[in-house]
Length: 297
Ligand SMILES: Nc1nc2c(ncn2[C@@H]2O[C@H](COP(=O)(O)OP(=O)(O)OP(=O)(O)O)[C@@H](O)[C@H]2O)c(=O)[nH]1
Ligand SMILES: [Mg+2]
Image (cartoon, rainbow, N blue to C red; front, side, top):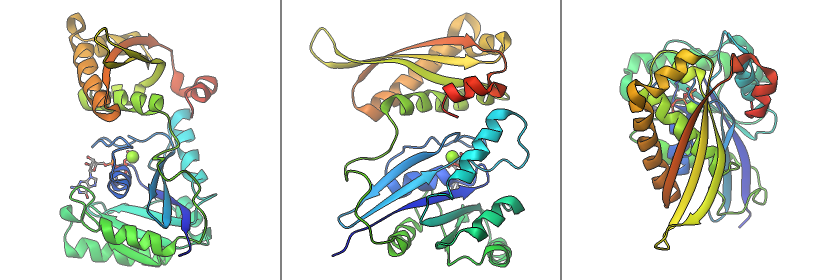
C-alpha cells in the first residue's frame, strides 16, 4: 500500500481549542492548554504516525486581531506562515462564540488551494441553533470541503477528524522518523510546562509578561544510581513589581510554582527532576526585536 504524509495547519482565534484538538489527535499533550487566551506562542509540530500515514500537525498561536506589542505581531506572523507549506487547512471555531476569524485570514484561507476542513469545537457548550448559524456563516466565507463537530475535551469526533485528515493526505513517504513526536526539544517542552504553571497560578498581566528559558539541562544520576535531570530555568519578567508578584511573600509563590512545574516535567520525561528557577527583569522584552529573536519568536 502506498504511504501518505503531509502537513496540516491548525488555525483559529485564541482559545478556540486548537491545542486541545492537536493533543487529542496526537494522543499526547505536547501543546500547553489553558482557559486564558494566547496560550500558544510558537508554531509547534506534533507528528502523528500510523503504519501507512504520517500527519504533521502544526499548532499555532490564535490570530490576534489587534496586536498591541511586537510579541503579538510576531505571533501573528506564525499564523500567516502556517499556510505556506501545508497540504490541508484545518480551521477551528469555538462553537459557543459568535466571532469568526477576520477578513485578512479568511482571504488567506480562500487563497489556499488544498482541502479545507472546518472544525466546530466545544459542541458541548453550544446548541443546535448556534451550530447551524456558524455552519452557514463559515460556508458563505470559505466553502469548506468538510465540516466536523468536536468536543476536544471528551474526544468526541476526534477519530472521524483523524480519518478525514488521512483521507486527504497526499501520497508521500514520511517526513520524519515514525517514532518522532515533535520537532521540538525537551528543553522547549520544559520551558512550556513552566509557563503553563505560571498561566495557571498567576493572574492579570503576569502570564502575558513572562518568558521562560531553560539555561541548563543535564542528565545525571543520583548517589543511588537513579536517573536525575538537573534543570535550571530563568523566568524573564518586564518589571521589578512583577518579579515581586512571582516570588510572593517570603518566596511562597515561586516555591509552589517550582513544585508544580517539577511534577509535570517529571511526568513528561519519566525521570526524577531537580528544578531551579531564577527570575530576571528585562525591561519591555515584548517589544525588543533582539530579545524576541533570542526567545525564538
Ligand atoms: N468545554 C470544552 N472546552 C474545551 C474544548 N476544547 C478546548 N476546551 C478548553 O478551552 C480552553 C482553551 O483551549 P486551548 O486548547 O488552549 O485553546 P487554543 O485555541 O490552543 O488557545 P490559544 O493557544 O490561546 O490560541 C481550555 O481551557 C480547554 O480546556 C471542548 O471541546 N469543550
Ligand atoms: Mg494553543
